[in-house]
Amino acid sequence: MNKTCTLKSNKSKCLKGIISVPPDKSISQRALILSAICMGNSKIYNLLESEDVLNTLKSIEKLGLKIEKKKCSMKFMEPVAYLKILKII
Image (tube, rainbow, N blue to C red; front, side, top):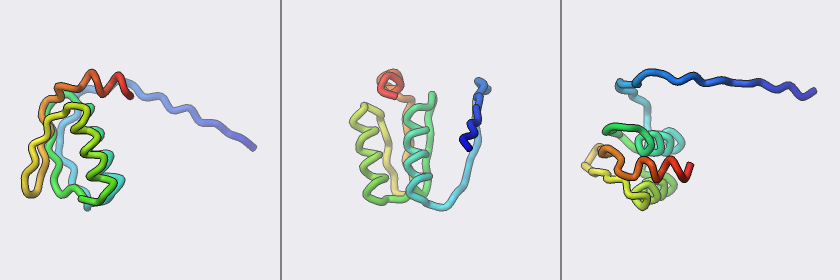
């Protein structure tokens, strides 16, 4: 009994806000990736610093994204490598 479900995503307006979640490996990786492909600056606080997450961060930096690292946060600058990242995806 194979049932399929089709999901359709419509273009939305600008998304702005603050989301607070506990540190988690998969959420940390998703936050890094979303920050890398979004237009504009992003800040991530309380990132889980596991080996997998740090490797994801290194990969994003190798794509040319400028990241300011501070004690408790990371700031992703307007992505210079934005189009390069989108071409890879």
